[in-house]
Image 1 (cartoon, rainbow over the protein chains, first blue to last red):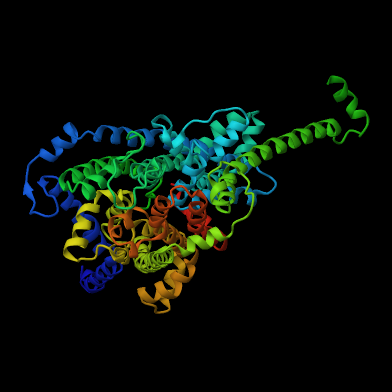
Image 2 (spheres, helix red, strand yellow):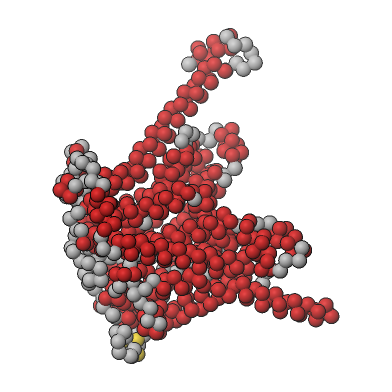
Length: 314
Length: 301
């Protein structure tokens, strides 16, 4: 067709134009994603202490991490514990608050703001605040519990309650999920509720057969992004451990991470302490790749249609 | 029960026979429902707000009282805030946080706009793949690539001890911002863009003159998110700025502040509030853009 000949010019120009618009990201993707990812794989087979030249050691780093590294087990356990418990409770609590907000008739603006604000507190500040609020000696929470005759737990200072305390902290910052669920709940067509009411449906039946089906994509989205975020859980766990330990550590100093008794040690913290405190680059890169594998497995779930991240037209 | 319903029609006439008692019952149910919902809401709101109240009350206590576990300050020591500001380095941390968050946001917005626009409005082969790669990058834990990146910045470019290794990459498209803005741009009707082209605008002019003004809420949302991300970032400054206290940010410095004033919860709480304050002030000025942005993250399929 002769037309295609005349279109060859514009088509090539269009391609160039597309490339031009995408170029910031294309460069960024290559330099700050693809390269370091390949380099991480490379270093996972190397012995490298960041001073001497790297030497090839085959699978030794991998064997070390999975068989010998004493902290790998606890770190993986803690990360998975947080992924399951924290994400589940956040979704349930966020959805409950979203439902509550849609039922409020008076002062919606006030309540929405009150529920939302803690989400904005910078993680370091929120964590320091919580370690203070929950400190077993003089913390306001245990003071209040004491006033009604309950002797409060040791919160961040007890290996059994340290992770649950982190969960409390994350529930305080539920604002983002609440707003997402609130928007989804307000989008459920009113007529469906009215129709269900005519059929004599009670509150639970309405939730189960009207609300739930229309919000499942959002719940799915919340679960998957929650899992990915919790895989990266770092700042709060690290700061809580450091501040609660009460040791005058000072920045940059090496302490055993995960106070108390490794109960708050997560895989990302282990990457940091391997790579930047022990200078065991190989082991740190193996740990990075473990994180990467789990994150990608979860992300591939997200790509499925049900989660709604990629719309049909993509 | 039966008697009331039976006697009801007699009074008001036949048009709305059940009006009186049924309406009263419905109203009573509504009132009880209102009370129940609002009691729960008030209780939850209290739980959400009390941490701020306790932090604030402790921040104005005297050194001695802050160690006591009492809840209400005997006397109000506003000077604690002055002490925090006078702490060596504290003002530098502020400056560094503003530099990181300000430049980081500017770079991110400028680089995300053209990319998001192309992904939302251009038809080209590989668009779906590009979107999937954007989402994958967005989901990638920062710890996965940090070691090779650190080695490049520290050993080849000698920029460790500064915040530049965190700021420069933001000029090359942040995946999360691209994704969010692209979702927003999808909602702009094609017709606006086409009519601009009919008027003889090139793609770039169309973007600047038509799309950007229409996408202001979306741009505001990604700008806010990026500002907050930088302001809150702890991991980044820990990797690149730890060895140089002159380059610390507030979020990173706060924890060392606690270490230095380990017994003085009052000073630590004052510093904590000072780290929280800017974010919350920004929120009150930009509430709408913010809530819009959060809603944008949970796009429906």
